[in-house]
Image (tube, rainbow, N blue to C red; front, side):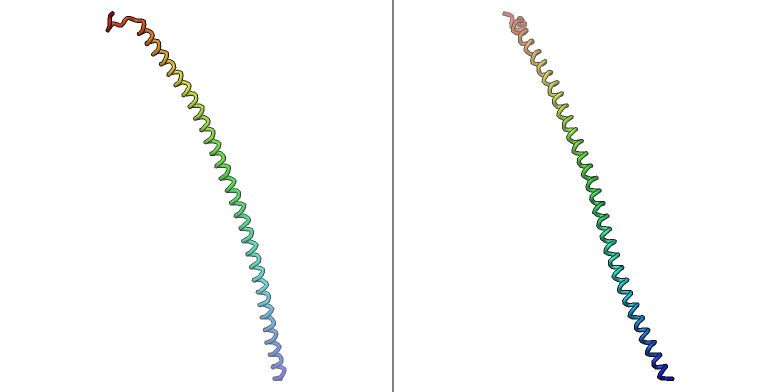
Length: 117
């Protein structure tokens, strides 16, 4: 009976070794699967990040373009105001020049009270 116990013990040990190997092999497959899933998740994260950055860059670009348009509009308005004010100043200068000419003409033709000749 000891021979059959010995065979039984050997078979039990071999069976346990086989189960341990199958478990280890299965664990390797699980590890590989987990590593692949992690790589895929990281790849998806990268794609999401790229899309997010792209959307953010587009938003920033639109904002900067809007600011440029606004600045261009302000510059045009400033140019228009400058032109209008320059024309008004030119008209005032002309009016002053005309007034000075009239005073000069009147002074030439009018008798000088300080110098009665």
